[in-house]
Length: 457
Image (cartoon, rainbow, N blue to C red; front, side, top):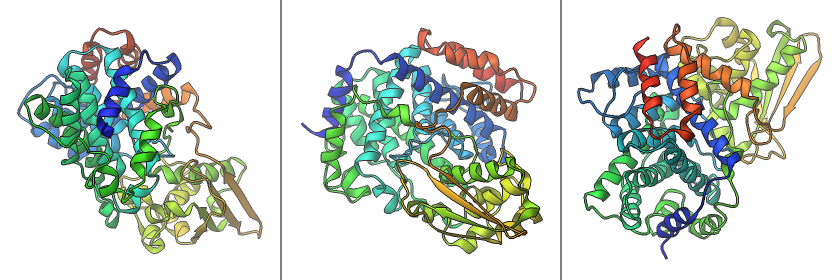
C-alpha cells in the first residue's frame, strides 16, 4: 500500500481523541488565532491586511482583521500568512515544524465553508498535525539542510488532508488531493538574504494549496499515489532522504498511541524560536540585577544546527534591524539587555543606539553537547566591566513539552495580541467561543466573534 493510502486508512480507523490531546490541540489552535490578530495589527502583517482589503469576492471564511468573510482558499492564505508574520506561532521543535500557521488556517477556513462541527474541525487539525510532525521526525533537518521549509512543503500535503476530511471526500479523492498538493508545495529559505517578509507566505500558501487541491480532487483531478515515498516525492525530492519513507511508515504505525502534539512549543517572544532560550537567559541575568551598562561584551553558545539561520554570517546578523532582526542572535540578546524586553514592537523600527552598540560587542561559537533539535538549548556568557564573567545555560525553551507554559501566560498572550489589532475590543467573547468549539455544532460562534473584533478596529 502506498504511504498516502496507509496514512488515510490509519487516520480513519482511529476512535475518539484522548481528552488531554484534545485539550492541547485546542490550546494551540487558540494560540494561533491570537497570533494572527497580533500580526493583523502590526507592521509585519500590513501587507496581508492590504491584500485582504483588495479582495472583492465574498465568502463564508473569516479573515483576521476583516468584518466580513472571503472564499475559503483566500482566507486560508491570508490567515496562514498572518499567523506566521510575527514569528510568534508554535513550533514542534524535534521536527522543526510550525504546525498551526498552516493547519489552523486550513481547518478554520474549511470548517466554516463546509458547516462542520467544532469537534470535526479540531479532530482534522489534530490528526494531520500528528502526520505533519512525523514528516519532520522522519527526515530530521533534511528539508532545512536543502534550503526548504518543511512548514510549507509538508504543510501543503497535510492541509490537503484537512480540507479533504472536512469536505467529506472519500479515501480515493483524499489520496488524489494530497498528490495534487505535492505539485503546489514550495517554500525556500532564500528570504534570509535580506529578511524579506515572503517567509510569511509559506504557511499561507500551503494552507491555500491544500484547500484548492481538495477542490480539484472533488472535481475529478487525480494526483500521484506515491506523493510521500516516490522518486520525486516529498522525502526524496525535498529532503534528499531515501530512507525517510521507511522511518515515516514506522511512525504512522503508532499514530493514535503516541501523541507528539503534546510536545509542541508555544512562543512567548515574536522572533525565531532558536533565539528564545538566549533571550530567557538574558532576562534571568537582568532579574539578578545585571544591566546593559554593566556589560562589556557577550558570547553566545548556539547549537550548530541553528547557525545558518540566526548566527551566520555574524557581521550581517549584528547589523540586522527591523523585520530581519527576528533571526538575529546578537540583536535579540542586546534588545533584552538594553530594552528589558523583546516584544511586539521590538522589530518595527531601526535599532536604538544602545542595542546596536551592544550587539557589536558580541561573538558566538557552537554549543557542545547540544540536544538540538529535540531541545532548543542555549548558553549565554556575559563579560562585565568589573571583570566578572556571568553565564547561564537554558536546557530547553519555555513553552516546550518539557517546560509547559502556565495557562495564565497563554491567556495574557491572547489578550495582548487581540489588543494589538483592536485596543478597545473585549477579547473574552472570542476566547469563550474558541474554548466552546469542541461542543459547538458549527463554527458560527467563532466566526461571529472574529468579525466583531475586526469591526471594532
